[in-house]
Length: 469
Image (tube, rainbow, N blue to C red; front, side, top):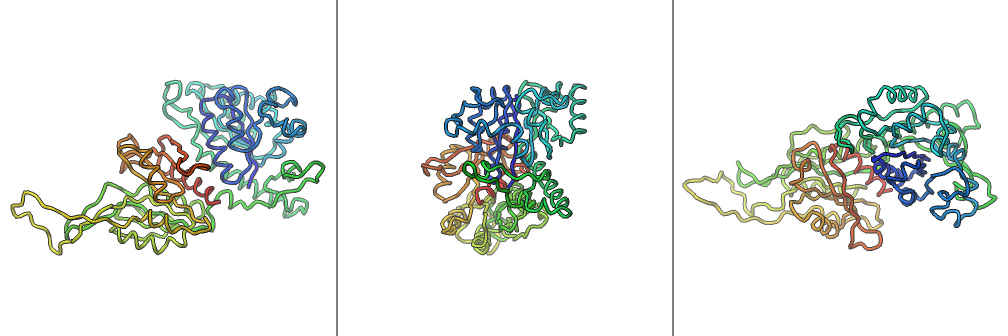
């Protein structure tokens, strides 16, 4: 696992940095956040400290009010003397500034060291990424574009902003890239650093056993949890595949698409699911290193690369396929829109109208596949189960009930009537529920903004990987 130094500057996009800090921490990385004074106006230092378990850096002057704000000096009187911008720069495997405001980019390009963040940046020598976030006119300004070119020349990887509606009301380029894209870039930087360390170490025995920092500096004693006066110890060599493929070696089971329940040889009951969400989840799991089994209802989608697809038609077919694969699955994601009912008796011949004004069909329940899986998870807690819920009313109440009754570790809920969240769309708007930490009857609820289903799939699979870890 890596040491990630996250710089946060003054921008409304700072809320996305909370997602980054949380995702990386849950994935097993150690994250330290350095905030500028402007950033503190958007997100408090306590927020990042709570998410990462590491004191948020706001000043490089020991004993100042800002350094004591969180009470860490009282708990550890030596902390303010032993942690500073130089040590943080040496500690980090990768440095990310997200969001990077126009002002911050200008100061970085000029080589200024007038606050904690820019001082740390000037002392840092490893891989680094810059994630611009600002008004479209500020971004397009020739001065900003010049500063970005200078930053590239200084070795920064620029994670280009996206286009869309901005907080100021303008529309255009300037939105900070989504967390999943920034996380992907950081994974690439870590892989590159690990490869460089291995290459350098092949000719120099002194670099063997050092973690992925190419600088070759072991973690300080206090970072390794050693007591006062203890010798500093180096970390184990990091496996670059672990950072980029957190699901490597795991089995992932995904269900997708609709089911079809026959009425007669011609007609059937079904729903509007196209399978896009489930297929995106399967593709993402494979990209993250998992062996993936995709149980798919009838859809018009090509099989994702590197995924084993089991094609089914009815809910009973899907239940049998899931029951065959579930025991071996480390993570199961039930994204299929399974028909709740089927006709009690399927007509062997086409049902004729023959002057009928109406027809009565007797329906019976199909197997509840999600509940079945929830009741059969391994006793050691090594299986993670994620369900989906499409609702038209009382989203939170219905989803919370489903999370508990089906014994899910995560439930992803959306409202059919919300723009961008219905069937057959390329986007989704979801609310993610997980069991409460102290009171299991009160779930933790996260509302995620509208995003492309491929982006959402990657983010969900990274979250599930962290839960499994």
